[in-house]
Length: 97
Image 1 (cartoon, rainbow, N blue to C red):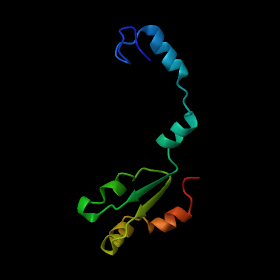
Image 2: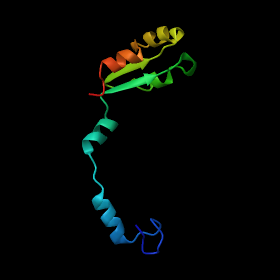
Image 3: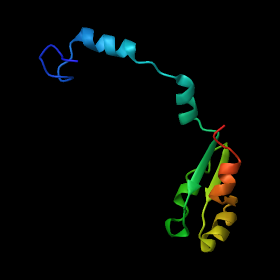
Image 4: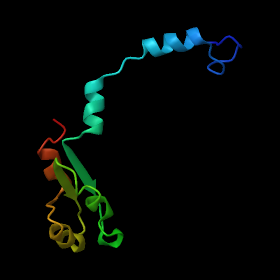
């Protein structure tokens, strides 16, 4: 679509902006799930980073999954009180539903 100055999307007039905004449809249920998830999967967190990603979820109220295949890291993850899973186990639980 050309704007009033003849360049696509460069100088919108008020009517063009209103029309585009009105045409945008938002599925608020999808946004709700994105910003308020029921579960979080942290893949590959390591002691080297102080398990930064797992610690970052300490206030999360939903289900927290850790996926780490390095056997040297699994005990450290368990010490945080987080159960470690294989990716296959996570997929089998169908957490996205």
